[in-house]
Image (cartoon, rainbow, N blue to C red; front, side, top):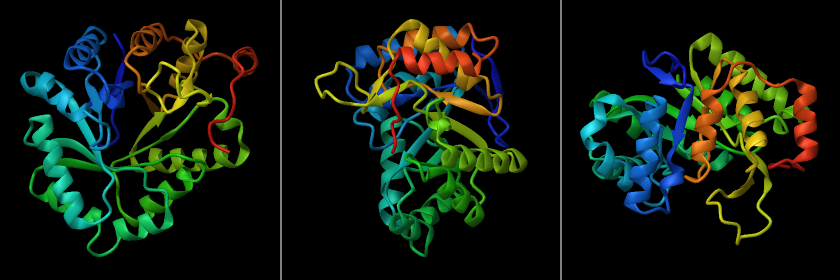
Length: 285
């Protein structure tokens, strides 16, 4: 079983591994059901999806309807205006077959103009705050990618008291001194304010160079069992963060099994060797 810890200030004990349901965007219902059933075997009790993840919300809704009480359910809106975000949230609730979300997140909020629009008057944040007041959502978070995301999340937290953040974390990425400093500052702030920190891209081997590759991730993932285990254990070695599983169902069993075996993180020397052996390259430059 995967250990659990407090998901920030929410009062929910979430599994250290959060199911990244982008993996369900392009699978059949039968494939989705099989992947979701696997979560039960490992005690995963937190699902993270988004309106933009293809068929993901629809696939989850059909499986989760009779199991809703057992899961912390999160989704995201990429809309930036009040009306569009409100409509998208209601559509997510419909697809997920639930009357409430535990967490709704402003998706990929890293662009300056997007940030200003979403956070300003008539912006998407107003719709999410309204939905919280109406009991449609319990908590509000913010997500993002790229090298500037940690700085943007700090800015977002200075503007609004978000309950969670989500951003990339892997050994190669944190070898970038600027990103590492921004990441450390953000996690330090989140620790003080009891904001949950979710991490993504743990299995990123590098940019996708061949669109014919079989994985549904937008990057090339690590696939060797030892490489997956080292990457997963390295992230789990930071007890302040959660690890969101990668966006491909075929990788899920190995990630779950690796997490179930976690005791101590690999050393920096072992991870440097890991980078060399697996030819890991920075995902963001």
